[in-house]
Amino acid sequence: MVSAVVAIAPLSIIGIALTATSWSEGLTVVLGFVVTLALLRKWSLDGYPRLAILAFMFTAASWIIGALTTSSPIGFVPMALIGALLLARTRRRRLWIAVFALAVATIGASSFVFQPASWALAAEYVALPALGTLFIIAVILLSEQAWQVVRRLERAQETEAELAVARERMRFAGDLHDIQGHSLHVIKLKAALGRRVVRADPDRAETEFREIRRLVDDTIAETRALTYARYELNLVAEIENAKQLVEAANVAVEVKFDDTGASAAHPLLAQVLREATTNLLRHARPTIVTITASPRSVEVANDGAVDTGVSPLRGLAHLRERVESAGGALLVERSPGRFVVSARIDPEIISSGTGGNR
Image (cartoon, rainbow, N blue to C red; front, side):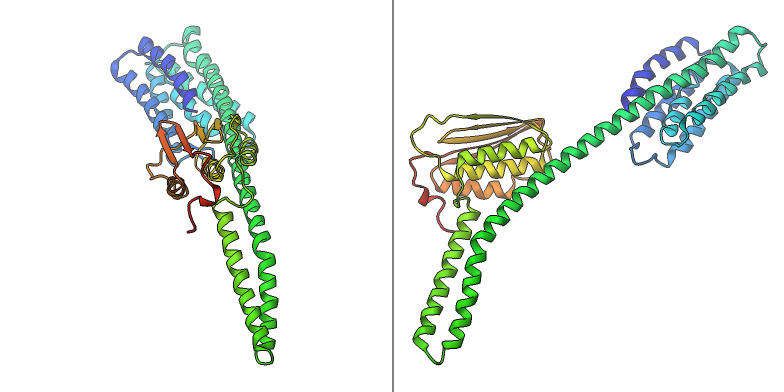
């Protein structure tokens, strides 16, 4: 909408400068443009602001005065702009467009009250306003449709990103269920058995309770491994998963993977890639994501960073501590419209020493 008004306003202002008979008359019409632009700042696809009707009445009064005094034949433009914006949201649009264009021309015809009728005057204050109003309405309607298309695309992209994050959460929930479901079921059975034999066979009960404690310890260790991405997680698989997630969000992705090294990549690099991918899908609006990885490093860059003025995300801050404790480094770089997460760990570091047990 703003682009449409900005495209029309300069030509109209030039026309006012050439046709206005005084500075006050020209200033009145220019003020109508200012009111229109101020109104557009609060305009949205969900409805027009309350001041729209008041602004329309002001611009209509300005055009009536301009027509009666024959000060400028371009004075109808602010009224036509606001009227077109209002008509864009109405039903039976064609009928109202015809009525509105006729109304603008009728106001222009009031110039005959104080001036002798002539073909030149009719062309300037009747034909030009009518045709100009129809042209402005056409431009506004096209802009409105383009705006709606863009918003639908943005909402579709947001939905895809949310679905991608939801799929990632479901995958994590499935892994967590696989780890804990069986163990908890066995613990429940052994606890019931231990309770039954605690008096009749204390040694058997003690054995069952020791087994329960072992199962609990194993479950905790496996859950921690899953949380810290040491449970069936590797860099190659995570690169493919990140690529699919980003593409599912309708974002272009470029992957560069250098697998020339003989050593396997450190598992923490895969966790950095997963966290960075999840964060950009939730907090950014990128058009392209670049993933550069090797057995020693991983880097995720996107061009859709939103400057919210907040500190680095907690997940990345926690990962930085774990990467540093593993002898590596994790960097988060912000620049206008760009966000880069990079981590580097030598592959010779033993995976079992990753980050320690926390």
